[in-house]
Length: 393
Ligand code: PLP
View: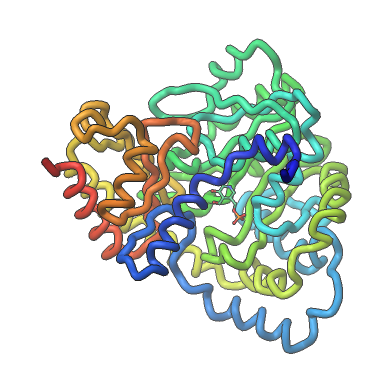
């Protein structure tokens, strides 16, 4: 018998990756599957970015390790972009580049969380937050169950114990909610007064819609001498999920500690991908706006179409990211003789070949997450199939 560690055994496989895996297997077997399960923007990586990677390969930037936290030129580029977007001047020493934002978050849990430490986030939350904290031995608690799915000061005040770390995702995957400047400031003040670490995951920060305004926490507080960390990356804004480049921005001391851990895990993110990311963050930013506009159109079209689905509701129109977190009304589950949203997702995939992860994986059963990072025709066809599924006799 293989005796895997207790840590590994306690780990839940990523719900979003699991649904997607099943969908990909079905597609490979020739089935006509529509996978709206993943957070992968469906645009080609912009040409100048791909060209920078090709140039890096051809000029031999492949036979050496880069510094652990990324090349100096990429870190400078990221610092300058952050300054341009938020007004806060950052140095390259306040930046570490990682193998996707996911690795930045993982390394953060490794440097911040001791066994038993409490880490909190809003409910619903991105699947990996809970599992990464668990791997570090921490206790993950999802707070609040309000309609909006936002982390609030009221929920923080209601805690029996001060958390070691607060994880905030702005805008939020899966709910699409966006924090106002005042809400963000209140959480920042609370974290500061409680002397806990605040990690703000801003990976969807540039994908907000219909005139909504995103406030980066960097525009509210200096990172110097603070327990504040910002996580971001190129995956979503530049349609670069496959390149695996993300980063953390924080006080120099926090960055040095992160680099210590990363030095034993990845050594450095892929050099070629770093060259591509540098082209992204230092190049023309119009490409981000082009992507954003396409998402905005899909959000509006899809939101209207979801209103036509009896028993499936989105109470508030999302303001950011690229997901709908859709409530399955109890009566609908009952009528379909299904026990849970996980059941709904499973049978929907089997019968109608539409892949959507269920709310269970996000700490909130009773929901489905639909990603609109897919072309509108595919979304429309998926909605047609969902309608057929929920109105069948
Ligand atoms: N944070 C959130 C909330 C996400 O949804 C994702 C990706 O789905 C990530 C971080 C990680 O992104 P990546 O590792 O591709 O940079």
